[in-house]
Length: 86
Image 1 (tube, rainbow, N blue to C red):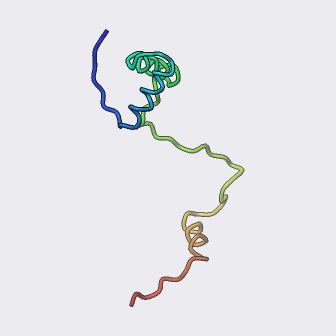
Image 2 (cartoon, helix red, strand yellow):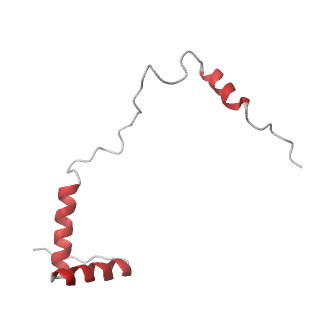
Image 3 (cartoon, one colour):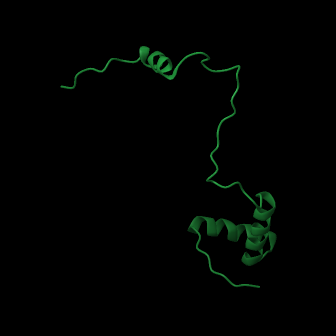
């Protein structure tokens, strides 16, 4: 076994301590079980955050046939006019 030291917010420490006491576990056993649960729940090889995610595209939705400039014009058509600042 490896011995380590961790820091916890005080409220979390008290909650975990109470949790362990209710089950008659040591604090170390509680953290070991928590770590094992994390390894079961989360994937071992999460996708890299550097991968560029792109939303799915569909030919059935959106503003078909409009240019970016036309979309911009429609978007600002109903906006409040810019009033001069006092």
